[in-house]
Length: 466
Ligand code: GAP
Image 1 (cartoon, protein in one colour):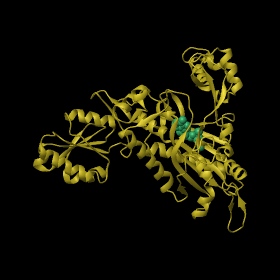
Image 2: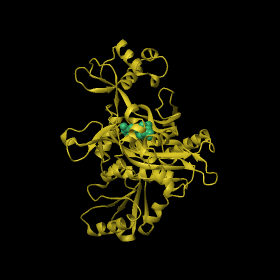
Image 3: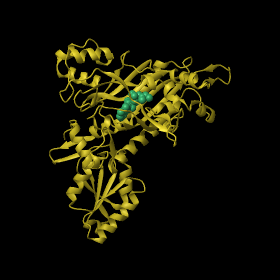
Image 4: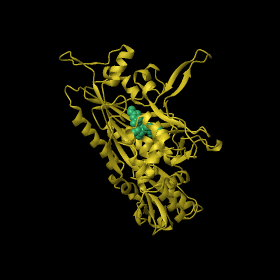
């Protein structure tokens, strides 16, 4: 069984073929950097979200969750620094007028040869916009279409829209670029409405939007995506940030390797350089996964200090301090932020589960049971024998109380197994003629393709032990 990572094209094709991911608005020619999730993909997304929520929020007494709006007061983004500092360096193809990330074009150029790489002194991440302009000009770096490029300019990633029904009286609002700000602006409400005390964390899962121009990375980089972010608040006078940061690193690693079952060989940590770090961060480390297009950020872990709460205090005039009930002492808490994209987790989960079984000439997704779109599939051997269909339906009704179940009564049984292998269904139960005689069924294991016969009465128990 080959566990070699598939190419991006292979996973894109499987995702479309089996209903995981479709290109958005494809009947109109598609929309760049936008994807929809089909029946199988939606179940995997939900399972990832649920696992994250259980692991980081509901199983911990020091964590609570919120669900804030996508449209926040526009001052939020001024205070957070996104209006001025949330920028990408972009260049334009002088012929096609398509835009590209200057840093991404330079990275691709540097990867073409060691000679190119050696022309950059220091880290790629440290290049300032002037350095990029110089390199693009000196090395005559062209667009992917082979045309000259304009000088790089900073381009803000926030999407803007307007509220108000009367034309001319509309006010600009930003569509959120991160879920984190809804946590900061609700900080005092959370403190006032719960019994929680420092140190504690607030988590949120929700859509964020960024005007991304880099194409070709499938659901890794999209205009609209789902973030799962935590702001972990603590008093730096009582809790040192380094050990807390280290504990968070352990937690992220544990979730990815143990809950999502990812191969640790395809994971690594990378510290951000001083120049690369976001405007709000004192220390940032990325948990990177080896995607088919290289090592890329999966999960960011940043020490945001008291930057955000202080900024919101200054811009709103409201106090976001915590008052110690015994001493009366006031503190502005500091924050450690683990921030991940659910869609990046999703892509990693699919890539890591991909297997080619050359011996049996099949492709399978060896997903952990709790992440598979369907945890079990139920088939009557043929669909024109009512006794078989009825017996299979009875099992389907019983099993669906606890599991996500697929029903398939079409075509030959071998093809049905192959389809479920590609969807990642761990078990297929077939009701055949023997079932009518002795109340047993066959249960087939996705990973081994082995089949065993078990009593119908033991099906639910069998699944619960796997
Ligand atoms: N609040 C901090 C923050 O937003 P970030 O590194 O810009 O930090 C956090 O984003 C995570 O969100 C990333 O690690 C990544 O997993 C995900 N993410 C960011 N931009 C994305 C995009 N355009 N498409 C999909 N996921 C994205």
